[in-house]
Length: 149
Image (cartoon, rainbow, N blue to C red; front, top):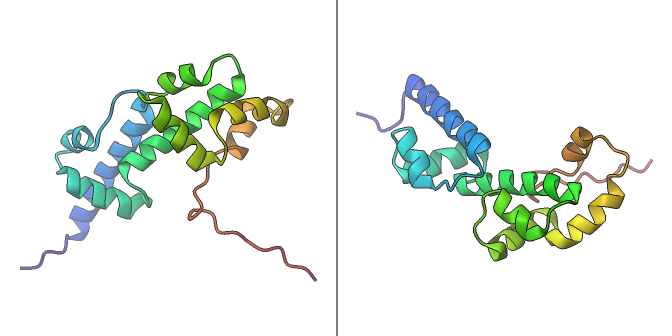
């Protein structure tokens, strides 16, 4: 007997992982943890974490925080909420954790981002501003050196 999953099982696991990712995208404001996400698809938390990372390149928690930070960036660009209000609006319960993670993903603290974004995105449609300002992890986007001829 082999421990490798069959092709059909692999496809079922991918469908379940997609459900988890969609749930995170929909419910990012809610207090989600890996155990609750795993229960929702009848997997163990460890199996879900391993399979999610294999499929999407990051843990479910990292994916959740990236979604929250993306939403926070949009709220900070609006400029009508304080950093603390944005922190709680995106589902984070700790301002310190939110600020640390924001700085890690975006490269500047949320307060600096809020000040700069008003000038940088002035006159740009919000859908374009969201796309060009999306946080990119260092390992996701390889640096391509310009070819000088």
